[in-house]
Image (cartoon, rainbow, N blue to C red):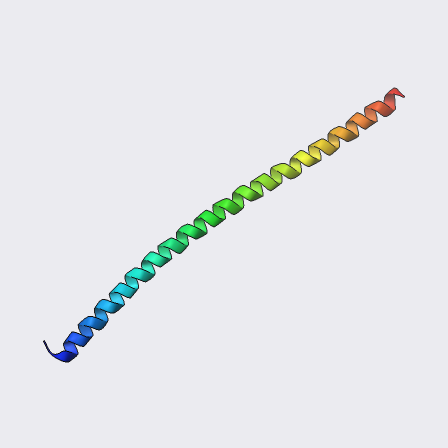
Length: 72
């Protein structure tokens, strides 16, 4: 094997390792992004329900207040 062919093989092996590392890193990043999206959606859902609960409480207080006004 000539020195030049050996250098080409070493470069090819190094680039393949780099590709595999990049592929693994890409998979890791995809997993992190999926988890971040799921967490964001869960927090958004919690926020929507919280706002709905606050609105329901306000409506309940208003209706209770209007009932008290009708009695007086």
